[in-house]
Image (cartoon, rainbow, N blue to C red; front, side, top):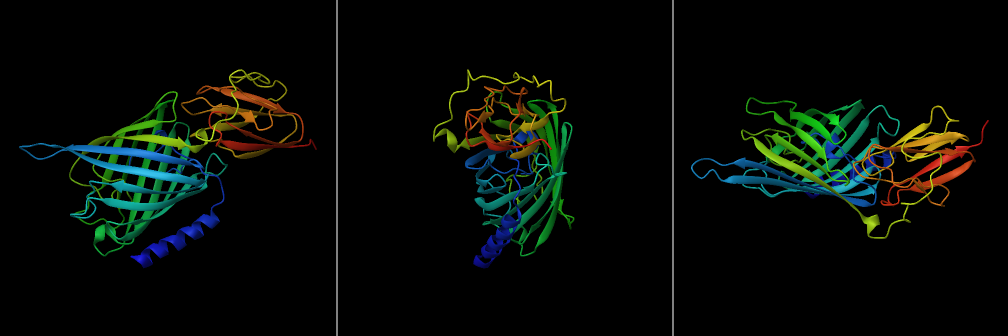
Length: 360
């Protein structure tokens, strides 16, 4: 077991060094129920509470609960360390308490300019005594976000055999805070007795908060790499609730921006001198583009894609958007060359920079 843990640690160290791009934290609005493709916000914790229920056999027909608790900390905008704990796992017989310690990196993101999102996860499953890994690719086209991936379980379900896995899924944003989601996964060398794992349901954003909710059906109990590799005969119905915890709030927030002045308007009023502003989405408690470089005279437009309000507040007080409501926008024209760092007032851990170059 010690050798397996060491192999995992060294492998993830290599991945971490290679991954330097900012990641994209995902809510349930953009993640299928059985595929975890997100990293926690840098400097904060992400706590996901997952419960899946089924009815036992007659005559008692007892309601049975299969919970999985996920806790991750964002060491950087592209790196999270955490764990999954499932207290009613079916991965290994007579071993219901399943622990999976994991690291997840996001070296490429579509919001950061890449053609797709890339997520790499490695971890150690205590129940299966296995070092496991998975690679996921995702791309958003309009309201649809598709994801597919492959994985490797060093010891699949404590059988002593290494097996590869494949998975695919998608989310469809029906409305700003409502989406549909589903996925399937299985072993690449699926045997006659292996069932395809599946899930399907709908996702909700909780308006005015950073929380999201997934309500779904599935045929797997625990959401670990081992748990989602093979389906069971039992269909479960459950929910997942996401709780991002911002440590910045406990350190004190930036100044109140409720009455702050606006430049070139708010809620989407652009500077008429700039026909095509540079756009930056605010999504999943972060500015999608952590650093942009523009020429003097360029207008930058921030669009709030989160279900709660944010601000665009200069660190030195030169500009301040006030509260930008969900699905609203605000713009500012940069006329002077220099480096302008800014943050969100209610969520000071959200930081980014605009570099303004002199006109050629």
